[in-house]
Length: 397
Image 1 (spheres, rainbow, N blue to C red):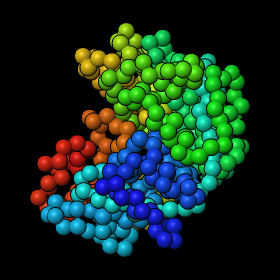
Image 2 (image 1 turned 90 degrees about the vertical axis):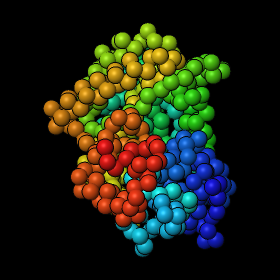
Image 3 (image 1 turned 90 degrees about the horizontal axis):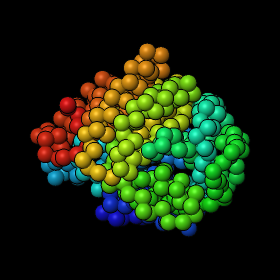
């Protein structure tokens, strides 16, 4: 389960399903190597990769699932097969975004490449910089889509607490050990609450994204940077996560935050309330990799730059679950209605961030839904993984 073996020629890495990304990077970095993987070290290889897997290397190589060379899979019959671009090609494609619907993956073979130090870190701005940050983010996604810098990424996170908007965090990474021209608009923007940009390694960056209690990720990081002390007293015993996609348009992003301002009013009195809107630039450069090496099933239009939204909300008491979830559902209905009315809606829902009630598989488009169901019938004829395996997003509602 915890297998982690690099091939003799250092072009492939075999990874067991129990491995976390921090373990992968710790193994590869001393060898001057890396793979396309997660941005939080505590996240598991299996879940992230089977759901897609955004990465700091995505503009250059694509997302994690597009860089799997083969999967070893135990089917519901007990048969073990290897799915790759050369054999069981239908299963290979289905596993690239299809989740846990087809079998138990017991090994991932990941494409491996030379990699040294990187440049990156977290820059936190006050909320009065929101408009300028969003405008710069749209320009960044456009530049990235035009191939200006395939090593640069930015995950922009807008944070809320009981007093409203609390800050804007730019998680900037250039996978070369130098600043990037298309990241300068964020690193140079003033005023700043904190800034820890430096030349470092991938393990440090992903640890910074992981070393947080109970998924209170961004809020905890900001509190720690402000106090330079112990922020672990922040408790977030319950949380909700959801996902959405829309066009590369700063006006749309601003309106989403405006909708949240109103939607969150009933939630502010609840204990431990914090929320984030993480806008992740997914440029054409990233999407065009999705058709390589056998393709994937996500069904995203390769001709436009888009954003994936990772929405997260944390709070202390499970008694508030229904209020939080109903607020989230209502907010996302409003976001969808608005983006549809303006022609900026993108149907794709990213599995790894989705609310359990969201229709992830359906968002891949009917052609991909039909394909996934056909693969399921072929490799799991008794539908064990649909009927008897809990969790995940199933192929039939």
